[in-house]
Image (cartoon, rainbow over all chains, first blue to last red; front, top):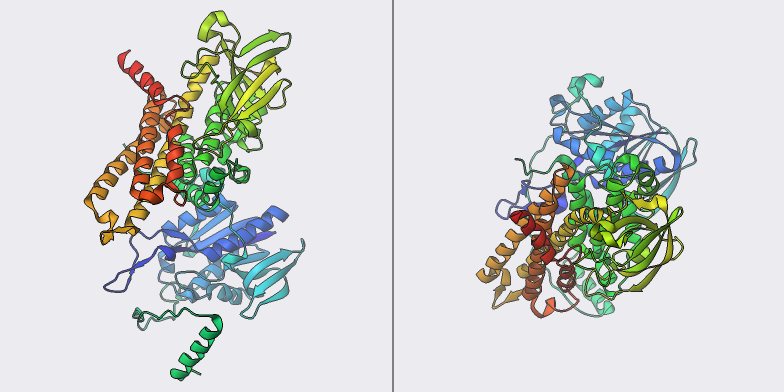
Length: 260
Length: 379
């Protein structure tokens, strides 16, 4: 089985501090990490590899320093790494990003494509589904478990707001995975020692056949109208009481504000 | 000169720190309290290759080096000194001498099992009457046909109860003094070998420190490590590496205590402000931090020299002397900064202070390190 995992380097948002005066994000010194949902996706692929002997390729689009997460993927057990890096890809919104990645995927063989559900820096959850549309592949989003029958069919547990759905899908297909689907493995020492001696294939515009107008800033219809920081809310009130009393108090307060 | 970490070292630190934080730290207090050898942690470390960091891939190692190994012992000890010494004794005192002094058969037989963590290693030199004076060995080894017969005992052996392989020193010719000592690779199930009483210790309480007993223990001739009479030399060279490991452990303990103290002095308020805002606190912390960083540079240099195959015996002694005494000072002051809370088991600094003390004692006391350093100075 051939599996391709799409991964992204993101700032570690748990480490981000806001400038108390301007309210903007202080990016300096914030470490970059492999996006947690993508790491869950990579773990899912590596678990399939452990069980069925799959070949796992990781692919990312990003600036040169995104190389670090491909090395991390090598150290976790990935077999091949592709880095889409070209100035023509820069400034891409989710659509242009998915165009570039789908372009690269068209050149590759796969039985299963895995992406993370969403990246913690943008939280759009759009790139995975967009890739599926570009490639005209069946897609299952919000995947928390995936079993393989050893031949062609995947049995998938998809998380929903109400609970979950069980689905059967034939490959090739795309799934977008939640970080909570598994506990991602640690890099192995040997994997780390060898990670920087292995080849990361750097692909540029010439490696993918995608119209330039669909890439980078040119291919991005998203326009940011305004960005702002929400003002801090006033401090809340804490009431300590028995649950029943508390329920009555909540109802009272909601009525007061004409919410119910 | 370049003091920056390589990309590989940064990636390694990322892994080992996450592992220490998530897998090792949550068990540290329990392992200490219950004097429990953390078998499950060793299994996890084995899976990741942490039990064979500096050895070549052809012997089942991770293909890393001593700098990475030293970083691993530091980071593990930062949260749990017991876990740090398990790795250090296993790697430096058992796998290392087999790799450095063993023949090809011995390397092929033992290293893959040790590096994969399937087997744990230990080392036996100290005896009831041979501590700092390690030459006063009383354990005897007599050659009979195709095997040696060992009689005697070893004490204070780290990992003893859980190890499968032991590097053991014994007298093959008493008339030759230190040149009459030979080294042997002893397996746990060799006839006549047994594990004696377990020590009740002040610190590193999760590491199983026991006595080794040899009663007509049969050791095949091919398990002689190096040549007859080379045992003392092998032991001393092995301890050079071991000291670098223990220096890394001491450094980790000191750093761990500093981490806890920095957190505490920012939170703890007395006289209307955080105690970290008092200059007395700041100046003391600054002095300690400078010593921790100095320890780190000494430790890294010793490890780097070993990797470069340069003489590093004195570097190792300096690193261990300074890092161990720094660990003792930092942990003692960390308890003081924590006040009454620091004296309780609610906070980890109390454990760290107990753990730190052993680093001034085992694998050569601080006095032995001073002997090594002074001897090189005055030769």
